[in-house]
Image (cartoon, rainbow, N blue to C red):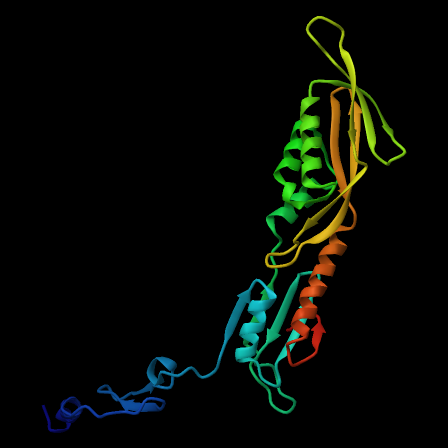
Amino acid sequence: MTNTDNVPAIAALAQQALAPTPVTAGNVYLVATADGSVRTIDLTGPEHTGTLARKSGTTTVRDAASFLTYYAKHHDDATEVYSDVEKLTVTAVLDAHQADTARFGEHRLLLALRRTKAWSEWLHLDGHLVDQEQFANFLEDHLVNLVDPDAATMLEIAQSIKATTKAEFQSGTRLQSGERKFVFTEDTKASAGSKGDLTIPETFRIAVPPFEGADAYSMTARFKYRISGTGLTLGFKLEQPEERAKAAFADVLAAIAEDVATPVLNGTPA
C-alpha cells in the first residue's frame, strides 16, 4: 500500500478524533462526513428553539361566549370574520392578510353550532303521522317544551289520547273555539260499545333552543290527523322551523358582531 492510499483512512480517523463542537439552535449547519459528502443539520425547528414560528391550527367552539373569549386573546387589526347561515358557522381568520403584507391564514377560530337533541326530535316528527300511543308518549317526553296550552293541559291531552287507543273513531270536526273533536265508539265486554269524544286544540305552541347554548325560540305547531280503518293517527306541522333556526343564528351573529373589531363578512374564507 502506498502513502497515497493511506490518505482517506487517515482523514477519516482525524475527523473522528475531533472534539464535539457546541452549535447554536436556530441555525442550519453543513457538516463534512467521513465519506466526503456534506450533511445538512437544520436546528431551526421549534423542537430545537423552543418557540413556534407562528400560530396555526383551527380551534372549534360551540357557543358565542367561547368564540368571543378566544377571539379577544388572539385577534389583531387584520383579523377577518366570516359567517355562513347555511352551515351555521362563524369563522375568524386570525392571521389574515394585511393590506400590504401577505400572511399564512392558518390560525383560525370556528364556531360550529350544534342542534339540540330536543330541536332535532321535534323536526324528526314534523309533518309525520303516528299512532296514538306514540304521539302521546312524544308529548309526555317533551312537556318541558310546551308553552300554550301549558304542560299540565298537554299532559292531560296525552293521557286522554292513550286512553282511547282501542276505540274506533268515526269523525273529526272543528269547533268554534278552534279545537278538534273526535267522536269514537269504545267496545265493552257486554255491548256494542259506548260513545264518547276526544277534544284536542287545533294548534299548540312550543319553545325549543335550536342550538346548544342558545335561548329557546317559540314556534307554532298545527295538529294533523287521519282517521282510517286502522284507527286514528296524529301528528303536527311546525310553522317555518328553518326560519326560526336562521333567526336564532342571526341573534348569535349579532352578539358576536357587537364585540369583534371588524365587520362580519357573509361567506366562507378560502
